[in-house]
Image (cartoon, rainbow, N blue to C red; front, side, top):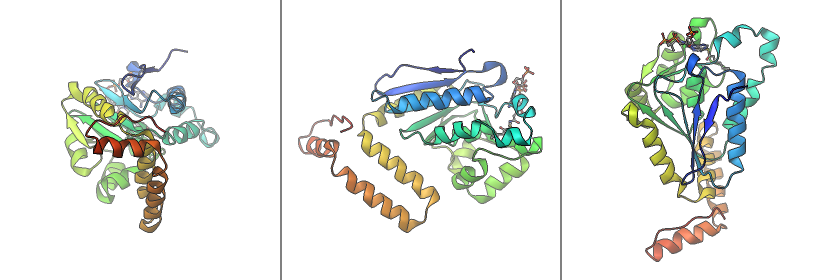
Length: 257
Ligand code: HXC
């Protein structure tokens, strides 16, 4: 089975994962999603990787679930769909995940982008949920994460019309944090990843968890979680190191302890 992913070695705490099914615009079939989930699970245990950048090609981040594979699945096939577990495993990744998006991010591709913590887009990127054109609807978080990212009106417009939005629109709506020239998208995402990779790993993990909590909990519970996480970090070596480095006017060196 040919590899559908390229995973770079860790460099300055960062790995680049490249989706690679060029003939079908990186359509997400079960194997590709499985390889991605497995790669992230392995990276979870790798202390040398602190941040991951996920990208596709210049033409497409990913043009959606693999429609030809989907066509072969009936109701029972969908009920037993192994991709559900792959999506859950991808969403469980605890380290910062940055998506560097050029070209099409459609359907499952847009849903995969929304599994990332930070999204950097090239000016030519297109984000859309065109499932409605196939007589279906988003099934990997597209209704839930998109609404939380861009609000009700635009999420409804995108999901009900199937029409994609461009990178600038996505930036204005809050789906994307930065827009770059397409040839710089990956470079910019890696530079940001390297910056984040220098921070304290445990603080990154808990900050990510607290921010994600804000999407699915009430304010009082979210604030309680934040307070607990903040308190837990008081027991870490890296907190001592961060404060000492500030007082001694030197850069901090965080070890994840
Ligand atoms: C399988 C796909 C594909 C897909 C493109 N291809 N998208 N194959 N699944 N999602 C294939 C095409 O069939 C074609 O193969 C090759 O990739 C190049 O695509 P073209 O259509 O020739 O390119 P272009 O004319 O530039 O159009 C690009 C495009 C279009 C606008 C992105 O390909 C398109 O509309 N794709 C489908 C997008 C979509 O509907 N996505 C949502 C899928 S449903 P050949 O062999 O002809 O060269 C979904 C549900 C998620 O994602 C649910 C999760 C549980």
